[in-house]
Image 1 (cartoon, rainbow, N blue to C red):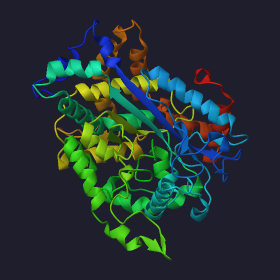
Image 2: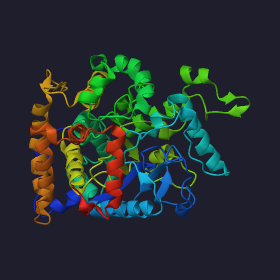
Image 3: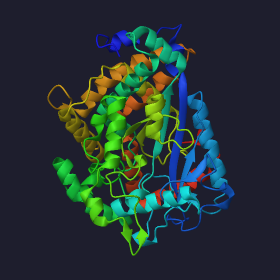
Image 4: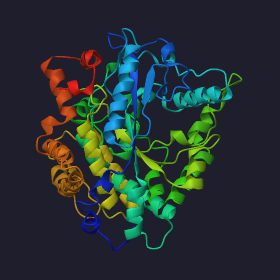
Length: 492
């Protein structure tokens, strides 16, 4: 984007006549949920036959484990369509589960011992065997229990009209695909800078079942290395955490190095991931690739496959038959981005509501319009520190974060600065249909900044305390409540 253009100038490009461009795009949602029994224990049954073959059903498949359903919408022309389709898919899935429930939380239900957790099974084809071996490698590298964490992925692309409009004003003579790739990379960098706000507002995994404590203890030494200020007994994490899922105790792992640096360009991104795919890991090499004559992981590299790249956001392209994501990106550039940082909110049937999706759209446009220089090693360190601070200590009063150009600042103060830019974006979006839904979504989320007791993480703690419930009791109760709802309009 033009280096001499800044936030207000970009926003001023849009007025009542072209404000609809801000919702010109495609959206898709992916939701992971564990199947559980009525007592909150992991379901040990096979993937329901009613869903058909896991490799053939485009809407209902599995993720890591046989019990972990993955619900996938088609790309939709509006946020509302994607949301309604996810609700429909979930209703269909629940209708085929019999007495089983969908666990409503991101952290796992009551888990059996590691060796009893069944990996997803796909069949006898070459593709099926590779998928199963990849999962065996994940369980070897990280442990099965850590892989049982679930969440929501938000896929978003700018529409052709929006891209053409921006290219006309900011393209500086570049071809449209080069400009588009730079645009998405810039958006991703800002997402990484300000992701802490999404963790704070939507983090909904402050607690765990005791069957997950072994993972917590195992990861404490790694937390000490990447965020020494966060080290304290597990009980303190449960007191202040907003999202254990996106902390080191979930999917934020160190072995992939300073992975955010690769978002400085599409070439850096593809080359960076290819490097991780090609370099042997000393740790994973010691584990070996074979045991008793049987292969136990795809390879001993830092990444077995590109899908093992655990980032808060990914650059994506639609892959054709026989093509990898990296091949597709190199051939045709960026088509959309995938946000991977969202927890399941137990208070909603689908794990989210429409207001959250409206907010996310506004937030992504903020990331598009805000200045976005390249990420340095120093900034990478600070971004990761803010990520861990908020995920593990976001509920702590007067928490201070680290902006990238000044001293520490209270979380609420920095959040207000961002909201001051989100509000005018939402106002312009609402011009398109003379509504107030985007502005309302901003106002609703800002209430959480002013009153942290409204955060989903705080609501979960409060309900558990008031009802004298364990994590397992709370999750089971909400799983049953959500299953009884016919659609998301029946929420609290």
